[in-house]
Length: 439
Image 1 (cartoon, rainbow, N blue to C red):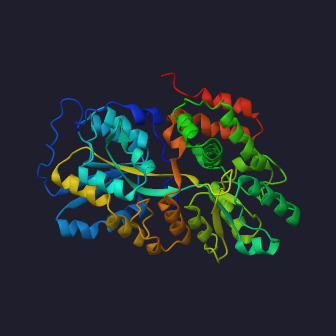
Image 2 (cartoon, one colour):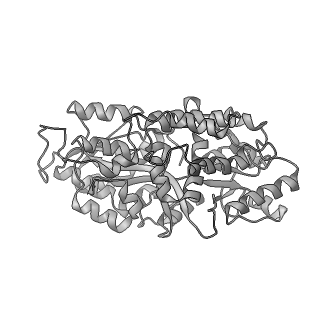
Image 3 (cartoon, rainbow, N blue to C red):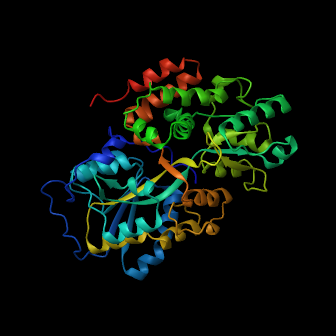
């Protein structure tokens, strides 16, 4: 799945808020006159999200048959201004029936202000059956369940050529140290830099670097420290975060290892993130780190993705062999009304039937354990589903999407750019941490 650009929270909400907000659970804010639970609907359910263009068309196809069978008209609206407009609409008394939230913290913020309804029991039952506890937690606030997971994407893939690996006599690494050894072997064998990287993304330049750091924090320090980091209980200046930067720097800041086909280390910041697809396909570059959506860019560059094809990918390895901790993103479905029609749509969107409808038409992937990976026409997306469905997988939402916008899409992005440009790690970490709101 290609990114609908990085979706960032605009309010200063951290994971601590997700776990600890007190909720009253009545839609439309204090004093509102929302429909009583279970009241009859009017046959129309409005749905609002950031998902646009081709992905939006696929969404509407995914539920079209169900609409007809249930005599409910799902009226879908997308907006790139969702993060700011959803709060304005809720406070103005004009919310949609359902919002599809790209950040759990945004849903939690609106729930804390009494705009979001607790999810129906049938939705929670589906989530208990078909999703991991990690995923359910992102729709839960103060022990009250508000929203089911929707679509998903998986980060942390390292893309490579199976043919080249066979030619060089190397194998997919099982640990982080193995990855470093692999990098050195390729460099010595080819005499060129093994890695290419592009962090360029307009005003969001730097975000691919945050994905690198998040992968290492989760793998090195573990999920508890990762969660504390998101909540600023572990600051950026903590040794655990510095260790992650230093580990990533063994690759990204090493001029012998990057930036194949583009220039020196500093060129990482000026190369658009999608432009690294071409050198991966033509063999100029051996390795790059990017999320599951990258297969679309590789296809556009003329590459065929698959385990026996031109290009394939493996997950960034854990520190010790056998571990499976991954980062990613997705959306959470939350409702502002709880009439019968809205609840019916919520329930359907939490079922394997809907998720299989979505993936079968190429509309994305889901972490729903009832999804059949064989329905997906993309090998890497099928592999992503298998990883997400694995009960031994530890999943964590993209940290920068959970941090306050001033940090996650602000000082963290800028800090990555500064770090690649040569600013010492300690200074970079201090500058990122300075972006945290004082309250």
